[in-house]
Image 1: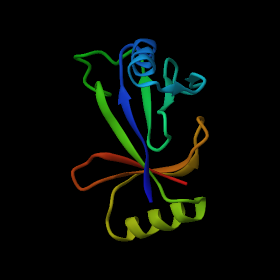
Image 2: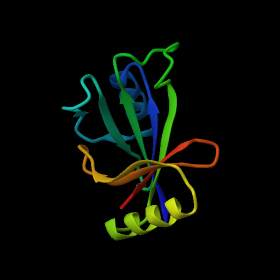
Image 3: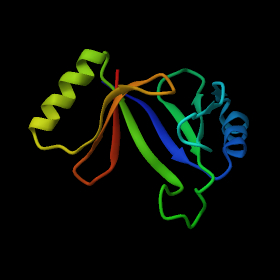
Image 4: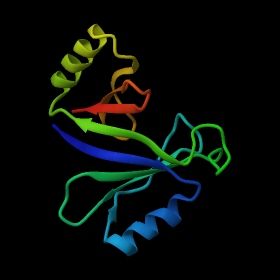
Length: 128
């Protein structure tokens, strides 16, 4: 297993994208704009050498004092290697009493993922 990406909310996705590109040599994918959540946009930033990526996300309602989603940490994604492994892990975690936030599905940005909570309530995406 490996951490696939970490995600942050930001009020200005273009400013944050440009910062990571300039400061760290990150490369952004094409901007994703949701068709089902108006105003939601994201980029995945890949850093030289590969490995864990950074997802930056925005919604018009996100501001420094917005109740939720808030700026900063949004979730961690852990890749388990396949869709079958996502399904099997979610089934085992459900049996163990772990809160399943969202069942496994193919998302608009191309991930097969389920969303769970860790024991402290922090959201985790389990991806293929």
